[in-house]
Image 1 (cartoon, rainbow, N blue to C red):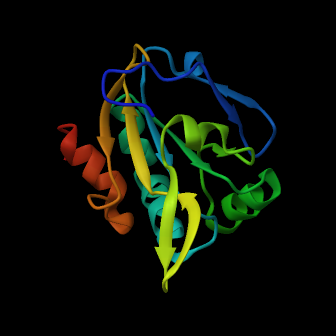
Image 2: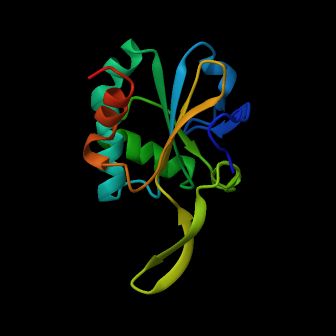
Length: 155
């Protein structure tokens, strides 16, 4: 599990185009690495669209965005095309990153227990160190990007 003060791993994974995403790609910038349960669901779509709509302001504040779910690259491509998403989505199909960050956990719905991604955002500093972790109870999907901007003095 990754905690505040820990270094993020260098290799994050591959995006929807098959490109490797590395922490060194964001050297000198802050990275908003957000984990979400599933493409094309209402909450995850609201969250992604919040980041899409606020991307320019986040970039002005020196922050880049990368989304992560266990969906495959093809599903990510559909999600990006349907909603005009303007940032990479890591296809963590082998669950390596979700497990490394500690967001692959037991969940429950209608009394049924299953493993899944717990919606969590990590703000990683320019030196690759985790500065902030925003947990599922704090995240408001429709305005998540605005929450980050506000928390980081940009609102």
